[in-house]
Image (cartoon, rainbow, N blue to C red):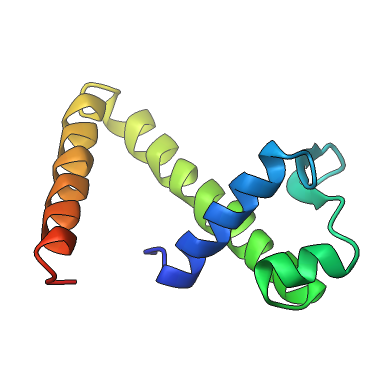
Length: 110
């Protein structure tokens, strides 16, 4: 699953607020384990993200517990069947795709 522009904007804002210690990401140790967002109360958070608190929770849940963890499940499955020898090649492909995307953005094609 690919990240949308809104997902990328959300992650940027989340990073800023986490650095300021306004928000915190923690692992909930109850079964099933989940990543949870702490300190997400108040108008400050809603206005920072320009969405409701429930919207912030929903997007966090989708990005961190659905997309992010699922990506590692896929990696774990592939590497448990084929080993880790393909990892460096996959990372090289990802870096190339990111570079190509950045070049296309500079040229105004995206």
